[in-house]
Image (cartoon, rainbow, N blue to C red; front, side):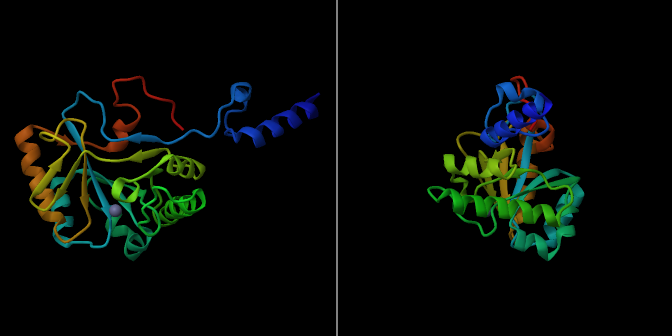
Length: 231
Ligand SMILES: [Zn+2]
């Protein structure tokens, strides 16, 4: 009886790829959960989320600004840049949650599942090997993705795909309409103008009475809707 049950369970595992941590749910098993795609956080709190991408430059003046501001940040970096000095990245701000951004900044939309899987899973695992507490968050380069991206990301344990509604480049703030608002995810880059961008954001947030918060604190629990099950 027991052996029979194990055989049935094994067969279902192959068919459904269901997580081994929840065998009691096998009867209602669903396929590997797709990552959630988030453009902004639904929250009543006066908070925004600072995200910084790529990593080609490590400007000392930006490091000093973040040291002064003590903002929590989330980064989506390329492993080759991160490899140059992982500690520089992890020491920024009050906390820097480091996610991934493919291996070589591949624009994924309309690429095959094999190409997307290699780019996403490779970037994710290399970042994880360089940073102890990296997060399973992913940002597609240029923001372009398709349904294949979700399948590829799911296959290597990405829980969240993070986009943005605001981008900042030096003195220029670009939004998808209107001012920066509570819940917005703000995109900046690790480039020479990073310090200038951060100071620009600081001034604007002061004017709008908003404060940066840690994205991971809000991603699954700060929403108005019931928080989805953690994966
Ligand atoms: Zn990028």
